[in-house]
Image 1 (cartoon, one colour):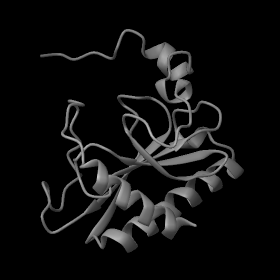
Image 2: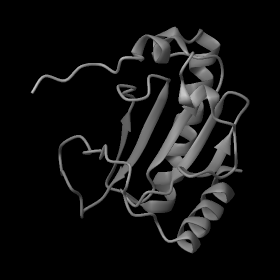
Image 3: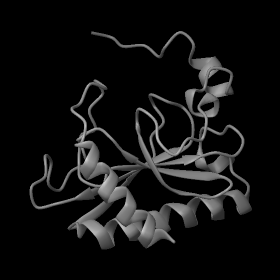
Image 4: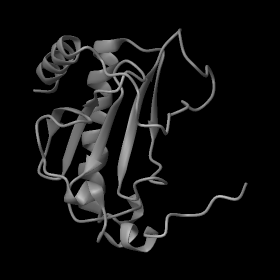
Length: 156
């Protein structure tokens, strides 16, 4: 079966139909809970129970698809925020390894999936298999809130 890019792909990469550009910078939404922010970056601990500590770093400056589209100053800001959050995730969750996945094949806006990797892992030694369904069971709200509070304290 041959797959094709979505019919509105050009609008997505141009920013005209970019869901990340259009979404407000909320402390909490259907995707997760914001645990860290700078003027240009948000870090959102994901609500879906895919992997403990799964967090997405979202570029909130102007619309860009690729990291190389950032200016040197913007790239430093994005990189520093990504590493700051990854360090806090590693300190809190104590994973065996951290993964950094910057893809943008579904949502073409610069963002990085931070995925702590543990002993009990769906693909040891391989890239983390991110699901594409969007209907994953959520983390218990109290547990998500507890983890977000602890991570925010580490990120202060």
